[in-house]
Image (cartoon, rainbow, N blue to C red):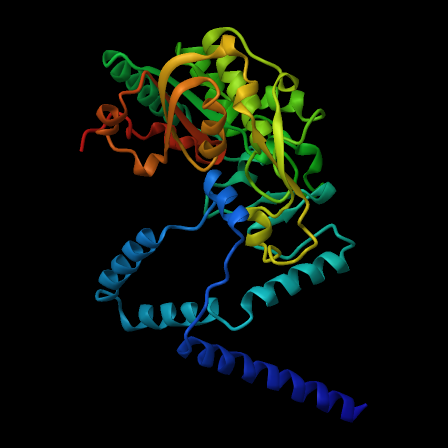
Length: 376
């Protein structure tokens, strides 16, 4: 018994010592980054979940270097420790092992992750508090104040007025969080305090107090989810079928007509896609969660009566990739740009007839930003 305990202790100590040593050795040797397949990279880029470009990473590195000069010795020590642990040898595999172990020990009902929640039927949910607060939205515990609702709405009213003065139509979309649409797959341990989320709260306020076209297509998505998978199981985003439902909800509100999901065609591009939430949980490299199907909208199947001979500028977050893809079947030209990358000069560059402003529900407070009418 004593010999067994001794050997366990020796192995444990060897592991603790070897891990940082292996990290140090690896850090001084030339590294080859892990590459995604071209198909995975294309999909991630299209729905906005790909990693930053080299140019963006270089800019961030330069900013970090500039900030470093003002750091205290303690902050420098903290950053050094953080950087070392984030680059720990085998870190991704250890995270994946821990996640798989907790899943196994709980009968597949729980995974150990600070940002990802394993729901029912192998559906992953985003529980971060660093990228919006989707769980708070689901629980209904982060409602806007009346003053916040008034300010956000006033900005959108001003935006519409400004664009109308330029001869541009303006519409807004708030995409429901996955938790709201697939409530039945949420773990029973997460209780809803109030079933009115921030997205629904904002939509009701806007619709009651303005004539803005502002849609929150929760009901449309729920009505279609039994006929098709609308959000990925392993990703926070809706797929192109879900994106079609969302855009048709907007078309109904704007043009008074919409098409059912069954009226158009989608090509199946993959049946083993692994989404962003699986990667965040450290499970992206395992084969267990290669379970998602990738659908691609065939724009030739779009109803010609819904076509608009207009140029669309779609200003939206990572959901905008697929949403703007759907729009290509219904507008003459479509341009998609991230809100943070939007520049006022794009109105002259693209000469749009229509501007659609989209934000995911977890970012819906950003409808209060004046990015679309601010001249730099």
